[in-house]
Amino acid sequence: MNQTYQRFEILLIDDGSTDQSSQMCDEYAAQYDNIHVFHKKNGGASTSRNVGLENAKGEYIFFLDSDDWLEPNALEMMITTAQKENADLVFCEAQAIDDKGKIELDGHYTYKEHYQTGNAYQIMLKMMERKEFHVAIWMLLLDRRIITDNQLRFKKGIIYEDMIISYQFYCLANQAAHVRQKLYNRRYRPNSVMTSAKTEKNYISAAAVYREVSAFIKTLPSDKQSPKHVIRCAYNVLNIYRQMPSDVQKRYKEDYKDIIQDILDKDAYGDKALKLDCKSHFLWGAYKLKHKILK
Image (cartoon, rainbow, N blue to C red; front, side, top):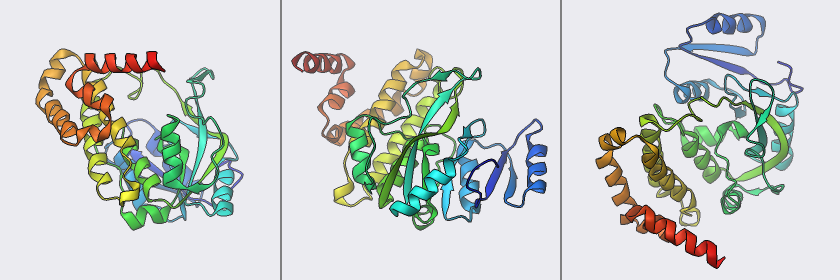
């Protein structure tokens, strides 16, 4: 409510909270006309965000996770940029801060240079080339028409869902603009879902993301079928599977084999290193070492 830009609505999604959050949401809604509350059974971040998408009425959409916060000028900077640059996707920068106020992961949510306004897909490819394509959905301000025209929704029941929908936004948007300021503050907790050891859910989610992205890329025009992101998703599955305890690996061995075969059937999307990694992680390591020495 301290934003310098005030023409917005807040949709508070109470995802089955068991503390006083539900009551606090209702109290805020009673105090402010532009705050609307939706109470639902616990279903996770994806289902909550989908409720928000289905009920939002504004021209733009911005996601704010429950334990994070924005700089006071965040919305003003992003909306002004969207309107000035005629952009239907605006991306900002962010920082991760722990509970003691210490900045963690310094530089993790920033960009090496200022990206000039232009074709969203081409900007994404440049980010990928520089290995700084951030998929965090809370770094994006989105024109709601992209969502409604393409009926986009977050995939339920998984983590890493940003890897699907952020990629889809960049593929479907026309113009993208960059606000080179840290407008978003992510509260960083070492033992959170996203930072803790890899588990069964990590693998299930990574496998689902790979399959979704692999299927989505086929629906795009030929000039938007760069395999860079699906290759990243494939590596994510391989690495997470190898990090899981052996007893968990056994439960998903056949599914893992299916994904390996699917990658090989697609000739590893033209990526020689990925192809070797599917056949042998040792061969992949030798290949990467050889290229490092030659470089």
